[in-house]
Image (cartoon, rainbow over all chains, first blue to last red; front, side, top):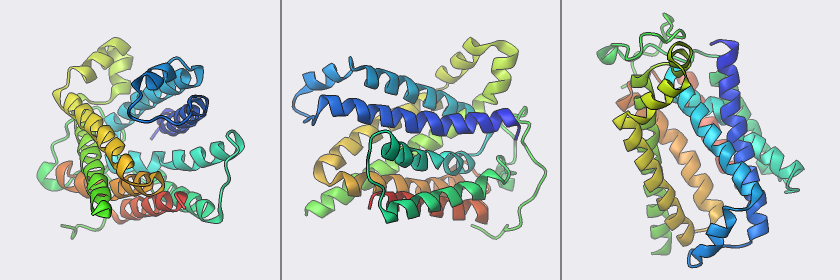
Length: 152
Length: 126
């Protein structure tokens, strides 16, 4: 893992959180939408918050794909889930939402989970039967072996 | 009956979004390191390599189905149940599916991470 790869993982989380918060902010201008009135949803697309939010979510998808191209899915998902904590904090400080005690507990658990994987290998040796590397240029491909081989 | 529909909807969201994530991850593993491709042959080549991949398109289709399944589930149940339940169960099902379909070595550390994040997401909804 190089510094720039950690930067990509951070961008995945930041773009996801900022994108969702911008969409939420934009939908406040629109109000409640029922599935029946389609024209309200079309109108929503012209809202500047929604436009920037959608651009952020597109950037999220691009950086997410980039991360998946050099790291395991079971690494990328927990490592970028810090976005849930970011989203809750942005909700509090930007949108003025309340954070209850159990939400703080949720944020703490997610942060712990992120810490668990982010410091470990991003790319594990795949299980023996499927060991042929599909992408030979992956620099983080590591020779480190994990202990538990008894999982089925 | 109603609760049954809600959990059916949640299950549909979890299954389709897991399938989407697995297919996208598989597609990107086959495409290879996007950073390297971009450095060597330019951003346009990297984008084309992704978009021309059939597994990627299948994954995006699953994500689209998952989005509509979420809309249906949200119309049957409360957002405070449906959204976090779907998100947090997806973390666990992704870990299982990555082990079996992507043959990723999901070690104890990653299991704990997936479970912590799943529990944390569930708590955020309170």
